[in-house]
Amino acid sequence: MTVFEEVDLETKKKMVSIWKKMNQEQKDHFVNQVALALSIWDSDEKGKRLVAEILSKVVRDGSNTLSDFGLYLEEYEKSADFRDKRMQIKRAVTIVENYRVKHALSSVPHKEL
Image (cartoon, rainbow, N blue to C red; front, side, top):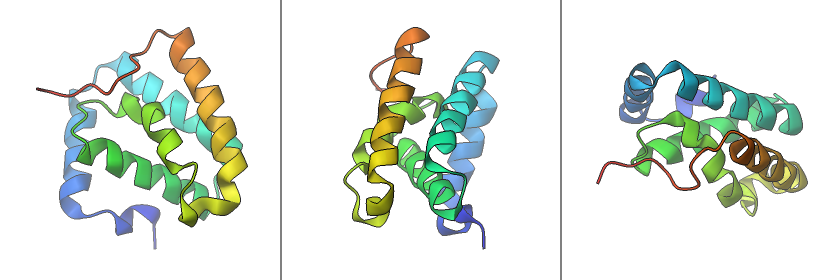
């Protein structure tokens, strides 16, 4: 079973649709943020599941770019499901936040109003 099997079909379709509309720079920022996070969390099943849950939240929240990934990390710091990764999540929040500042990425999600 893959971690994305737990994500509903509609959300997965929206993820793909958003990805297709993103420009290359946004795609690069998204990939870099996920790679940074996984390098801290470990790319074990729990780390991958955390990525899937965060992406689902990004999409459900109405963001129109997956490069908003880093804005949603902090919400999972206190999650009971990821209690054993709390310190790693906190560290990832700091590192990804610094990445976002360095590259002048928005501090609020990109949503259509």
